[in-house]
Length: 367
Image 1 (cartoon, one colour):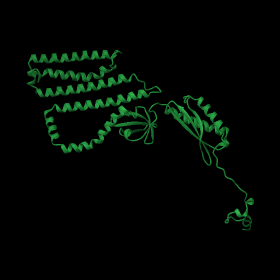
Image 2 (spheres, one colour; image 1 turned 135 degrees about the vertical axis):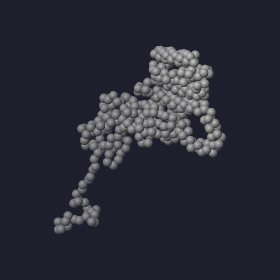
Image 3 (tube, one colour; image 1 turned 90 degrees about the horizontal axis):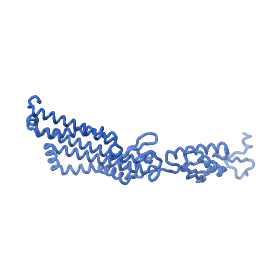
Image 4 (cartoon, rainbow, N blue to C red; image 1 turned 90 degrees about the vertical axis):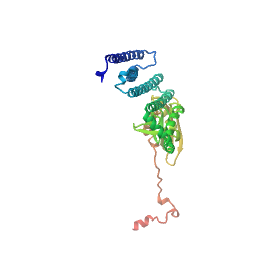
C-alpha cells in the first residue's frame, strides 16, 4: 500500500512517526525524572507503568493527524482510522486514570503504618481507600466501555432499538439485578461506615480470623488455620458478627481452672501474678483471679488477663493455663478434681434402713 503513496505523503508519515517516538521519549524521561524526586506524589516506577498508555495515546494522536491527509484516506477508509483512534484514546485515558488513582492511593497510604501494635486509624484509612479505589475503577471502566460502544453507529442503533422495545425485560432485569446492586451498595457502605476494616479480627460463622481483603461484592476472611472464608458484603451489614478490634486492638483473655474445694485461692492468685510478670505477652494492665462458680464436684476459677492484641492473648491464655495446671500438680495434687464415694459398714446400719431385696450376710453363707 505504501509503495503507491507519493513521496510527500511518505515523508509526512515518516516525520509524524519520528515526532511521535521523540515525544514519547521526552515524556517518558520527564515522568521518570519526576518519579525519582521525593517532592512529587508520583511513585518511583510510575513512568514504567504508564509507558503503554502513553504510547497508545500518542499513537491515537498520530492517527488523528494522518486523517488530515486525503492521500492516505483514499487508501484506508477514514472511518476505520477514526474509530481506531477513538478506541485508542479511550483505552489510554482509562488506563492512565486507573494508574493515577492507584498512585494517589499508594502515596496516601505510605503515611500510615500497619505494622504498629495500635493500628486502628491506619486500618480505617486503608479500608476506605481500598474500597473507594475499586469503586472508582469500576465506574471508570464502565464509563469507558459505554463510550467505546457508543462510538459505533451500528451498535448505537442496536442499543436504541433494544432500549425502546425492552420495557418488560428491563423490569425483569431490574428485579434480577436487585441483589447484585444491593451487594454493590453494601460494599460502598462498608467503605464509609466501616463495621469492618482490613486486618480486623472477627468471628464469623463460628470461625476466628482476620479481614484480609474487602472488595465491592465480597469480603475475604483469613481463618487462623490459613483457610479463607469468602462472604458477601451484605453479610456484614445484615447479620451480627464479632469484631474484636473495632475500637482498639487490646483484648482481655480468660482461663478457667476446675479444682477441688480445698484448693488455696491465695496461692493461685500469687502464682498467676508470678506467671504474668515473667512473660512479655502480658501488657501489665489486668490481672484478676476469681471464683466464678461452684458445682457438686469442682470449683470453677477464672483467671482474667490483658494483652495487646488477640493473637498475643491466645498465646498468653495457653501459657497461663499450662502453668497453673503444673503449679497445682506439683504443689497441691490433693486439690485436683476428684469424685468422692462414701462407704458404710452394713453391720452398723439398722435393719429397718436396709433394702428389702438386700440379702443378709448369714443368708449368703448358707447358700
